[in-house]
Image (cartoon, rainbow, N blue to C red; front, side, top):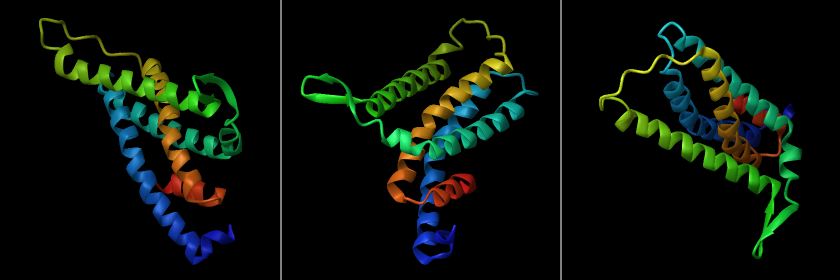
Length: 163
């Protein structure tokens, strides 16, 4: 806690908070896109829950930081390249983000307006689950940035909460 009161601590907190805000923009965009398929009255609740889930997942991941960093032991090899648990998690998360963003972009540009009927709104529970999964994936870049910026867990958590 004393680290927050030192010049390097304050500088780390300010820098990390700025980076967390930048990294959080994509999360906000996806929460907005996914919640757009809800009824108008359900959209604000889905967005608030999505942001709360994002904060919760980031804090939980920061608390489990040692476990994440420790996943560097090779699980298997692809040719000469060792693939660790961390590599596998990041790869699956990246593929999920690419697939989801491609589907959302297609839906916005091509999916509607070509003789299709307007879809019924999605269920609130389905959207919350989807937002929760997206929040987990988006938390990786945030957590990895925090790990690289400072060793102080308190500074990391405070920066995530502020952002």
